[in-house]
Length: 163
Image (cartoon, rainbow, N blue to C red; front, side, top):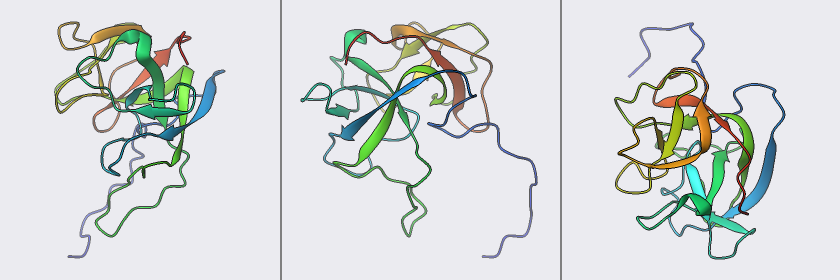
């Protein structure tokens, strides 16, 4: 079906991209997952089975000490024929250790500036971030402002001690 309407408004943010040009640290890690549809840009990742080498999507028993950082996009991953952008197993990804980036948030979450960030480690939203302390574990971060376009919000990560 052809596109019949056009919107010239620039979207506010892209999951896994830098929020601004503030100083930051991004390190390289391998996707330690077996499926190409598990890891997404803008999610929080845990230290993988080889610390300092790979990262994975958090599981129920993940802790704040295992939080590696936000999975960053390098804007070089192409869509597949269904329009999905997949991070392939063993693909190198950037991990924001500290700095400002657009992180994924669940439906219905409306963060505000300077609210603490909680990292969701269970369920369908595992790897996303929230401002609800009952839904995640605290990490060394805060929201910069309200949500962007879609289910993303700008997050300021302070230095993560592991990795």
